[in-house]
Image 1 (cartoon, helix red, strand yellow):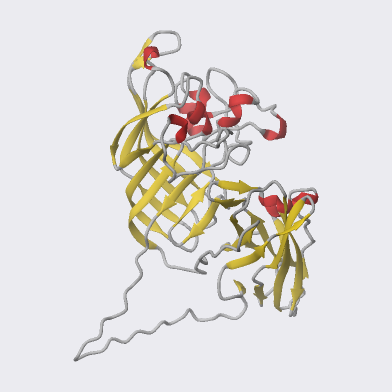
Image 2 (spheres, helix red, strand yellow):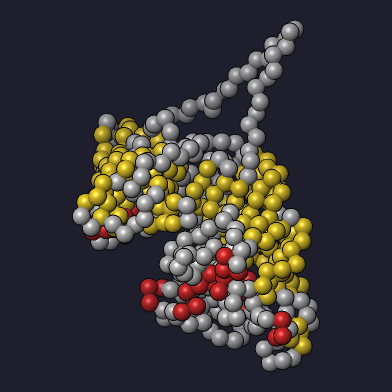
Length: 439
């Protein structure tokens, strides 16, 4: 069975109408570091921003949690901005409103800045109620969230969840209940975007996630284009029936499309190791000893001095804008015994700029294999989604080698073509092209 090797992310920049972007490169590798100042910012869901009776009431924040009030509730926060549906579950408005969000600070834990892998814990709580006070609906209390991320970008968000005393939908009193720590949402490999040395954004799973509820409305799985799903089934099946429908599809269209969890943002500071200070009487000596190279190994690295692929300024071409460029080539060397098959693939995120975005499907490529002594072949050309299809929004092969290929190396490159509709607003847009090797 193929097993994934550590993925490396390449930042892709394109200016639709203005000058090209400048974006810091993600380090190729870094040691896991301890952090004490992590931040966690989340707007819950688009459903929480519109609600049946208006935006949900987020209140009674404790510890290191604070409320960022968005324009959906008359506030002016701009720290947390998400693209409107269908890019996320944020309801569309004109002008586009900003969501209410909860921000945790002073988070602690470990993180690998190169991949985002690690565990970050936050102290504090917030309380949510989706109904006006006259209903006496029980408060939902979320406490001490923990974000866990694996090297491939998968992971989960958990929190201690409890329900206050109140009245159920039938008018009967309900006692306070403590459900302990629950997994609120999960996310698959490749769910991190905007990864830098100081943080990243996570898009949780929802579409196609099946849940079988013990009572109440069954999950609707008939919506077109798989516009149905669920938060983490562990959470949905545990919470009471009065709260449960907020977190999974019970119908199609309308406010149902607002139920997926919104992305959440993680930030942190990783302190660098200071160089020794000079002394009048002594000197420090430092040396780095690399791991010994063993014969027969699979190695792939991204050539280039930084992780930025600059597509420059897009040029008007009738009903669209067009920009071109080339990825930083990927050097693959395979000298393993048995010459097992391998492949390198890529997938691009959506392009974003100051709260606006456009679909990553508009990026296409034409792979090529040069300096090829290892029997590799370039992947197929993928057209921009502007001409049809999904472009590089879906994983595409950059290059591969079959079983029993020759030992050697290859330099994999690709010419990029970006075509975006003329309706896309002016700005400097950034996306992340994530490369994954399988062998």
